[in-house]
Image 1 (tube, rainbow, N blue to C red):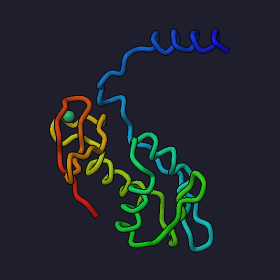
Image 2: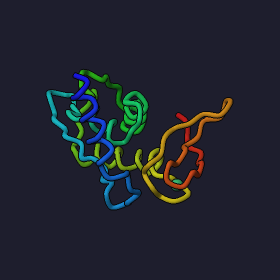
Image 3: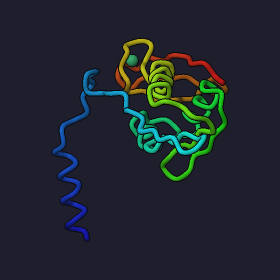
Length: 135
Ligand SMILES: [Zn+2]
């Protein structure tokens, strides 16, 4: 087990360092499926992982923007209305421009950070801070 771990460490070290290449980041495509009067986003948790945001935050945004309630179930998000893939996709894209891209340099390598009572988007690429809309 120890050997395996040290091998793994070496392998990780050999991996190229993260580059800040804008072309590398692609907004994930939602895989949707209509079931009765509901819409499933099958790869919802994957999308949240790629965007590095809390699934609950993205879900809340989609509920508000799509004017429908819903629930996270396993790795999917279930929306209580029928929606075409492109409608869902557009909202994911607006989420990304509002909450993922750095407003200073435009890179997607950002995270939510908090200082005191103020939350902001911290950019790992340029160190910039930008505010974001709360909902
Ligand atoms: Zn930045």
